[in-house]
Length: 231
Ligand code: CA
Image 1: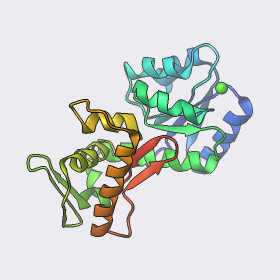
Image 2: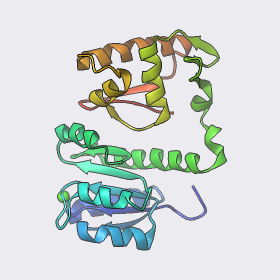
Image 3: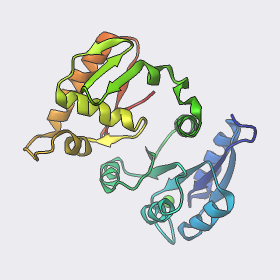
Image 4: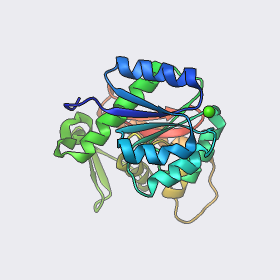
């Protein structure tokens, strides 16, 4: 933790849920503020400069989508979008709102705290020279000019599609990509491929990463949504 506890702004119009999240986050050592109206979020972010936002999608006044768009015009604050419908996440991902993570209701407050912690750790790593403090990050070497990659010193024999897949995920650690988004990045010629294609490339890529380091799962499946790579 930094000298001062990080401030989490909870944007949630259900008072009980907001209070529950605040309790768990405080127990984990964070400071919290609650905002229940979408129209007030921008002013609160400018005033409080929170370290992270938990942003409910369905809000009175202004919904979470609009709030996210407005914030991204002036702020890089990490945003965790909270929605009541898992099917909604795929659509949200497609909108490329710039949210950093998505959580589906009902959630376990412990899971929320774990995600908040992971994102803050990552965003601190990104803003300091200590980015190499993740052993996994330094274990994966990607050489774009040569289209080659090594994991823990072992060269990975990747196909061009697997290479692009790995590079896409590794360039945005922690970000969840839907299968559609991955397809867009894997094939530039708009050939007809299915979601299954992504799954089979992921499977092959995982097998090759596993061969280099069996104890560490680098690529995670997010049920019903897609994939992400975690350090
Ligand atoms: Ca709500």
